[in-house]
Length: 60
Image (spheres, rainbow, N blue to C red):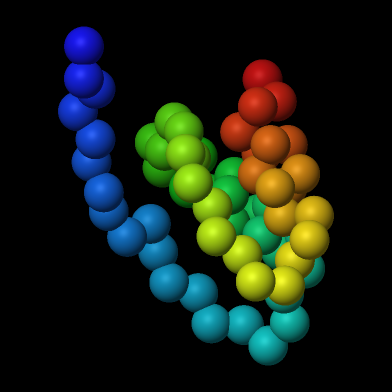
């Protein structure tokens, strides 16, 4: 059975300095707005970003 997939822009943020803690806050904010699952994440610099996503969405 195919699952209906909805693609939406989750938000746009402009900051001078990015960190894991900053992105963790963004992820928790999107989770609090109803995002239940993130299936694909593309990053170019932050090597531990996948850990941040896992921590934000897998911790219950």
